[in-house]
Image (tube, rainbow, N blue to C red; front, side, top):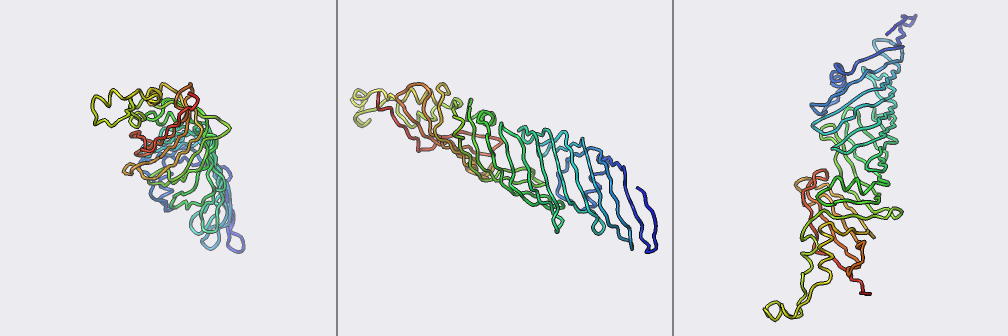
Length: 340
């Protein structure tokens, strides 16, 4: 840092032409001094920041601007299960009072991981407002085979909390299936939609309410993970013409349910389904809530079958990143092929 002066008015000029700051040993001290709180205790931040800028020092007060650039930073939190192994930023700050306020921030990262989900091509572009907050004009990431873009939002750097909506486009069902192996053996096709997302320095990322629908341009199909009874519990193996209380006569006056074998093959993942309609509603119930997602599917068996169409609901309980169980609603509907 260089300084010249004072001039006749008692002002001094200051400038930083090529400064460097190793964030490893200094970042926590700097954010504490700035008043930023609530960060995870195990947050790790490394990288060398390059500093440049200048201004005027007058009457014990400093004015001016500071530019910060970093080309190989890294951040992680094992407690919140996320890591950004390498990122670059360019930020412009203005001197205000005894500190600096952000005027602009641009961030890029080639890759990151959140709760086991790999994110690529992260980008964020923000500008400062008069209240010292950051207005994020554009933010997005490639994930799950598609693109996820965040609607513009405002965040206070001293109390970083985010509430916005993520718009999903072209997300691959195959990658979603990999996240819920208890529900799906395999899947193909794409979904799009919107999901509320929240993030705080204390709790990390959280998914809120939202809805996804199948993309018409990308036909979808899937196989269920083997779940005996998932569909057949709603369809008897034999259909009786008289009440079961008639005993042996009821068994004699019965015939095999022509749909039973098809439903059994579907629930065991042996018969793939072609999706005609699919919707996913997400709920922020969390681990203690009755469900975190409800999937409604209308599909047809890929192979010829007496069952022409099946409509059912899947309730996913527990947090979205830890699927606990799979259950069908009582409103399973079957449509039979009338040509058979």
